[in-house]
Length: 333
Image (cartoon, rainbow, N blue to C red; front, side, top):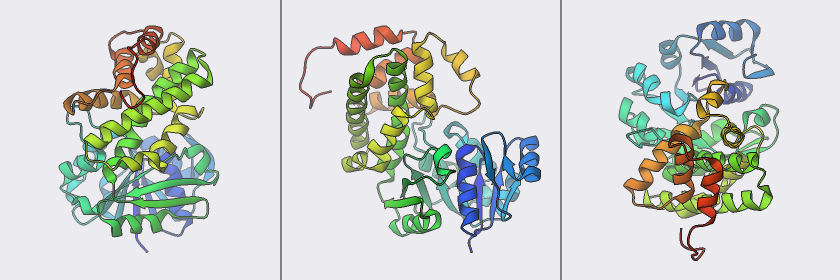
């Protein structure tokens, strides 16, 4: 059987490591904090992010990144998007013959590269050997074996099918796609819209407002995705509208939480310093703003969220500005 390493033992990385180990694969999980790695190794559980989910015997945890990369045939990168390049760079010499799976959802600041592009750029791994796994899959539910669906995307259809087979279970249904651009952008940009959904919740604006935000947000995401070369139909699927809905509506959503707290008057620094896990949408908002201007795509919701996060626009003023823009057709921005 293939040996698999999961780089990053946060809640999602741990969930996937357990899933793969329960299927019988030898799995090594890498945890960057040495004390936590030792604790997981000894207690056979991730008490920090996934309490109550015991590790199978064939799941080992290490703090040695090189060891984890060298020992396996398939490497799953489950670290936050803003550190993907740094982590890949440390083991790029070990990645030449490896198959890669990315589960990080984000767009790199400044370069505006998607995660598969970051891995390719940093390690030289052929794009045909990189897949991204993305969809509406909160670890809190998948770890309990509640039914979920996800998309394995690669420009190499056969590799996408390999990853589909690797992760598929009776509670975790995996679809394939060759539109890795659309799948990665859908999984990243929905976090920006989810911050807006949190603002809506925090201001008590109701179901109508959130429905409008989700649908108009999807239109923005699709416009930018198509400009970047994605298939528009991808955004109507699991990794598009599916992921957008769950991230905008779920109490598990860290990005929705950020928006909710902003609407209640807390500063961004206060919110982020109180969170153990990463809200990807904050950094992605910077990238989405930069990318939309580079591609000359109008994204008014994203622009206003950028202003709220980084330019001291109040959530209340942001909502009023969006609602009082000049009248237009629904087909317009």
